[in-house]
Image 1 (tube, rainbow, N blue to C red):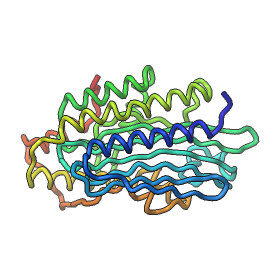
Image 2: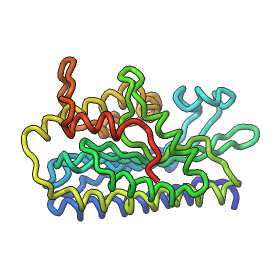
Image 3: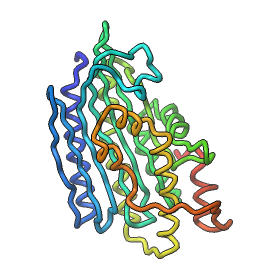
Length: 295
């Protein structure tokens, strides 16, 4: 199979539909706002955003197919030789901010770039990660079992890359318990790399849905909600200060509402706050966020 954007675009749109349907079923009440925004030369944006649900406070599952005369700086900082060449890109990116603090936030994205250089250059990237507010060992094990099933022999390297990428150096802590992260992926040629990318996309719902279903009915109160809002601040800090995907979206001229749809609806920052030792909140920081081998 020759590298081409069409089958990747088709798969990403199908995956978007599956995830949107699954999240609506989990929430049971709210539905996604669905928009299709076509552009010149066949490009397409399909924002899908849910807000104010019974179980999901906010979720965004975004699909884009874009093209342009040159890649934005966020995409060429690791590959400067591609600067100035025309490109096409297609991607799916999602975030889920649950209502219940015992249900983790999750993020996933998959992307494909096709650069029109003298010799065409293409590569895949993406992954998924989990950001709990309260730690449960069985959830972490399940999440990483699914990640390992998706990535196979590459799991160890992609897990390490995820731990390193989703790290807030200014806080000296990981954003969550990790998962998978890969970039510039051409392993085995286009057909093999595309199959690998599909495996990761197809394992997202089996990884996340059982955890959501297990925790969504857990009773909680003001204390747990306050902690959830405080920890969401870390999520916002990462997305705005570090994340390459956010930078790419803003630099490429994408619709700002879509680029920033991943941000949580409510966040709290507290000055120099530290949870008390021996509490479940403190255990998240000491026992779950530091990288470890879960499987």
